Image 1 (tube, rainbow, N blue to C red):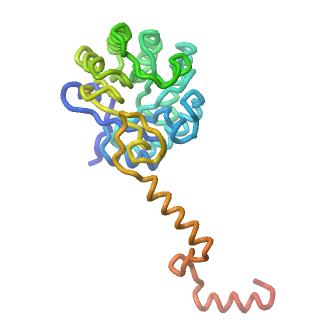
Image 2 (cartoon, one colour; image 1 turned 90 degrees about the horizontal axis):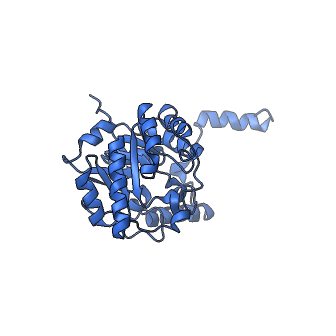
Image 3 (cartoon, rainbow, N blue to C red; image 1 turned 180 degrees about the vertical axis):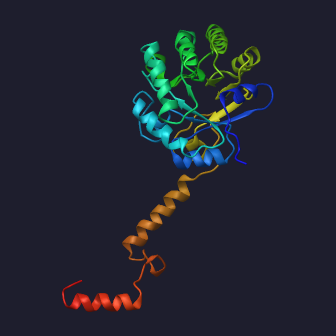
Length: 285
């Protein structure tokens, strides 16, 4: 009997019952791996701008990019809740636009929920999406779509005033009907308080151990993007080095005439080869 795919209400019901494991994925193979690993939620994040498109940030990621990658990922995901990340300017410019774009994730790309960044200022947008039947995951703390205003990728909620604002926004998002809330790059004490004081699951990324769940970027976990990583990332395996070595070996074998070898070569049957060679001699191959 096929396993039932998790839904937004299932994730909401996990609050206080169990920890939630959330992974990003961006295409069919990463979706297959994340789903097979047992992730509760698979987020097609706009972080694909960094890890798939080579962009310096997420501001250049478009709706077309997100729908394309979400649709590819959805073909692989059978068990986890698939969430599409709403990119920059896909919801900030108006409620009607926000609902229409959120709906495309469900209607066209196979997602079953969306995520958006921001606090109480987006409550009207969230309520309109919910009224249209679109589950919404919130996102507070370091919101990468705001890096121009924030002045870069900086931890948030480090002062008492900023922390109080995060708590207030978290409560507003929970009361508006979000089924879960990502907390990114905030002090553990702030995340712990928010987790205690709202009745929806918190999903931490650089927010300490007290959140109801955790999320990390696929490429960071498996070491597919070399270079600097945030301090909160744990790399579980280095796939970059063996993959590069394998590709280098292939290039060397091609240049050295060792690939393809006989094992990778298709040969004609003897009778067909004889007929082919005979025909070729008369110019009618």
